[in-house]
Image (cartoon, rainbow, N blue to C red; front, top):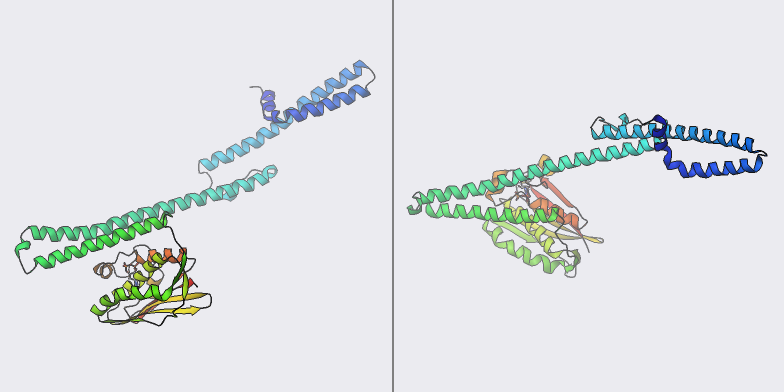
Length: 341
Ligand code: ADP
């Protein structure tokens, strides 16, 4: 393709402007010129001028479009490691900053996708590991029973109850996994309404009384103002409290578990405090992560999944609140959160 034709192709978007401008000049010339020869010469000059103009505009556009195309190709081929390396020149400086921010956004998106992929792989690894542990244990006990231990009255019931304990662990894990996946896929629907705090908490604490008694742990529910109404999803808040109280009992060997509801202006603070093993400073920041446990074996032996606090955190955040924790190893822990009154 000839250079002139190529430049014409690049400048053809301006043809309507060129034509209207040219037509005006030809009309003015026609009006002002007094002879046909003069008009013809001027017309020829105007045509030559327009051909040069079209060529020059086309050339400039072509250069700019090529610069942009090269930058896009270089971005596509990962030639840049930072946005500062993208240069489009003075005339395209506005576009340059747009392309730079687009490049930065794409880089961030890619980094987030990679992180997400890593989290997903880690999560799948954790899930398989968590499933494998109880399944192997159940298989082991059943195999031993089948190989003859079933007739040994000293161990058969013990092995069966251990296998049963692990089926419970599997069941807990399944429930927590369903909750986590519902939360993360945004399918956990919340149903907010006002409910009476005292009527709500009394039966929950009652449900744990026996468990606490078996461990010789005191269970104290402090006085709650009878008319206190709070706003939230009752079922989900019950799940939170059940989790916190069950953890408090699980991780306490002696002493007591206290449940308190304090008035704090427009909010009320719900506190679950125990005198248990406590949590060290270094673990405190991580206990809300999925599958994080301070002591894996201990958690498993008491039926823990390592997902409970992650679910609690999600639910409390869905109430526009925050779960707080204070703890001192050897002295106990205190979990609390605010609910709107
Ligand atoms: P799990 O099912 O293992 O209890 P959670 O997510 O509920 O999982 O808790 C995460 C970890 O936080 C537990 O494994 C335990 O180490 C620690 N933890 C939670 N609550 C308490 C508590 N009241 N006292 C001491 N440690 C606790």
